[in-house]
Length: 187
Image (tube, rainbow, N blue to C red; front, top):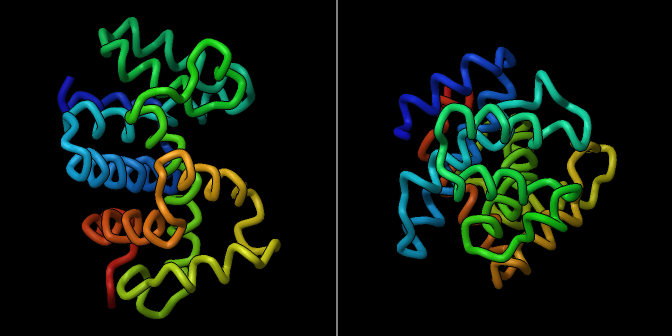
């Protein structure tokens, strides 16, 4: 599967612009990490782009990811990608543990990308010049982006054996490359 085919699946199933942007943000972080680790960028890109493609139709656990996995398998998406997508949800860990770099990274960047996007939207310079210190300060504010599980961000950095600041910096750098697509262009 290539990016164009994956984009077709995403846009077929996701109408929400914010969810599409989230998937693009995760895609960018996955590609960034693939480059850092010398992994297959296409596999990592598709995994990031499609990780939440089924969320609008199946928002509740365990249907989210499991119903999507059925659709992806029917479309011939590689098991490595489908299994990684399954592993990013807590309810699938017994059968799909986070035991490969692809699976670990998807979990690690998912919540963080969402949080960084929220932080960037309230800054005059959006994502440009965003520092880990600012992101961590917002993490302490429980009312800000309250749906984001802060512990998942911390656990994700640990899973990748990264210092939290470095983990944040990697995701900010990745998301900056797709700022226009994320609606974070500088005016």
